[in-house]
Amino acid sequence: MSTLKTCCFIYNHGSPYKYLTKECIDRINSTDDIFVVNCGSGFDQHGDLSGITKTVYDDNSPGDLNLYIGEMTGMRWLYENYAKIGNPDYICTCHYRRFFRKDDVSDFDRYDIISSSNKNIFPFSMRDQYRMNRNHDRELFDRLVKVLPDTMSKLADPYFSDPMQIFKQCNMFVMRREIFREYYAFISWLTERALEIVKPHETLNDRSDEDKRVISFALERFTSFFIDYVVILERLRHKTCFDIEFFRTKPW
Image (cartoon, rainbow, N blue to C red; front, top):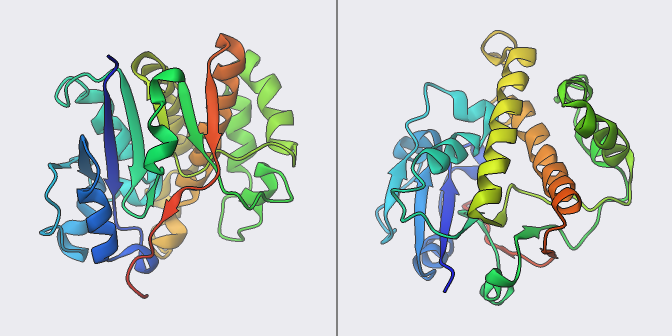
């Protein structure tokens, strides 16, 4: 029988995301085979983890790196500690306020990848979604497309320009172990390229915590691209869930 573990990322990205509610904690505690990765130690000072009954790991990311690349510091921990969590056949990722509905992943072993998306589809492309935020680095997206290997880059440009593409959001997914390793090799390499391009400690220091997330928001869209790319290339079994559970955090 195939095994599944769920990794719940928690982090502090600024005021809208500061505090866990009882509903968030109860949802974490209600999930079987779940563990928590505290990305960037964000909640050590900004939130109370005492109500969580599951195992909590600190991703030990350096300095304020988590502010720039979001849960990618947690993805690094997950990749490096995969054996520590039991080397499951499948890994599910979620967030302290966003979860797959349990029924949607009960048949996880019928698929190679399960992705998440918003049931309210944006009427514009992923590239335009990113550029609409005036605080984003409008050139970063195109520069990341150009650094991709040729086979990927030729597909990525029309993919990100197509308003009909479904955005697999929030870096939430269920992946077979071998595919997760492929994904991490791709996204960690791209993260390094993004840090070289933006140089966040030089260019983003004066921004609010929320507005430092330009790399994180870009990488989320490249996760979506990777899923669609690898599904087509390797002819994988895949489904997208459009109705994830969402829990509000405490007020601003």
